[in-house]
Amino acid sequence: MSLKPQTFDNHARYVPLFHFVLAAILLFNLIWTVWHLVKTPSAQRWVDVTMAVGFGIIFLYVRQFPVRVQDRVIRLEETLRLQRLAPDLGKRVGEFSCDQLIGLRFASDEELPALARRVLEQRMTDKKEIKKAIKTWRPDYLRA
Image (cartoon, rainbow, N blue to C red; front, side, top):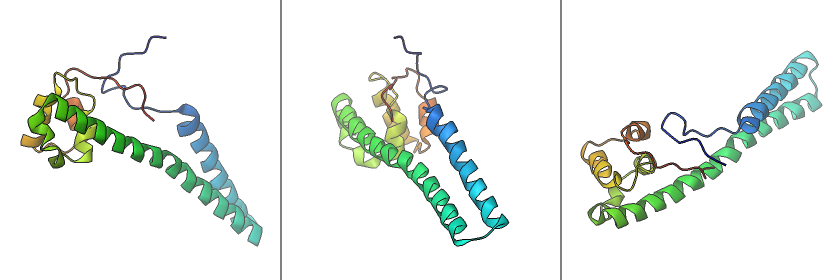
């Protein structure tokens, strides 16, 4: 199986059944239950709306929790990369924000030290801006 080369423009990951189909189903369910509550109010209709809202909350957090863990792993991985590739920056790793390290994760090993120094010197904080500054993209196909 050959994978499409990853770039800034196509690196975002969407799971169609989750992001589009399930989101649409849950939104439809919420609208449906609210409509029925307004049309014929009852205790059961309130329970239905409460459950629909609960499913929406679950939908948001079921994605947010693994992404948060992924960000922590990225922070660790980039800390180790900086220590290996640029020991002087490895000592300054505490100066990087999590977003800066996430932005740097796609930089090739050859490009990382110079770009990391630039991020600190220019106080670049927007991870999208950092990703756009990468010239040699290091793909990551194993993201959550």
